[in-house]
Length: 320
Ligand SMILES: *Cc1c(COP(=O)(O)O)cnc(C)c1O
Image (cartoon, rainbow, N blue to C red; front, side, top):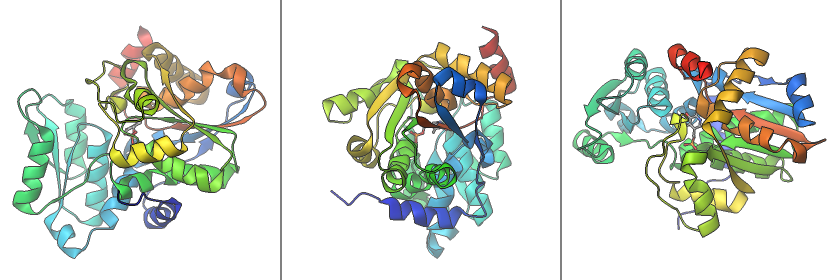
């Protein structure tokens, strides 16, 4: 097996994104501290450029393109935050970007991607394979394909959020991180091992799609059908090879949270902290709240991974 990325890659990524990505704030709440009996630090990636941590990995990966790759351009397939992250990072670096999205992708997401200067190629999600389309485009036009999580530069970039958190607040006893394909969690693991080695690290996925939890217990990458959940950023069907190898080495456990718990956290963050966080972004907080009794007296970090949810949807989720 090829060697896994290390903390050195996270540190190099931090230098590359400096001045381009926001150094997002770490927020605290007395109410939350009292509820958990702990000292809680929220890393606010909902306030990152384009609204999620994914800008970090995208910018890091594109920064490493050579001249020929820059001229030819990048291709990505995604209907979510990765698409917008690649489109924005590419525009900032002067690289042409092609994003493969399903015909039924939400109009707001397509508009956002076009707004960042990306070229959108549509496909039919029921009859066509987006990975195949991405690979064909890459081959025909010499584009470089950047996947959403299973890529060394992408996951190293995602690890810079935790690096900033430890730099700002020092070592922690526990850290809770949303989990989809594992780019954020594996990058966070590299930073945690280096900067706060005693910290327990937890990945949190939607209850409806616990493929990561199954993968850790079976010791292999388990594939599932696309889970039905409001956490659309974590509707992945399986972990990646790189991300799984790091997660199984460095992560304490994978926990789950229900849609109802996510909505409850969205309401709490909006009312008490004036933060708009998308359902997926609440996974870490939801799991920490489940474990209130066990976190007493401890220093706890939580990554709020993104804030891209349109206002209509936000309101209708909270109204139910
Ligand atoms: C992509 C995404 C995740 C999951 O990240 P992975 O690297 O796929 O595990 C979590 N939260 C938000 C907001 C995301 O956009």
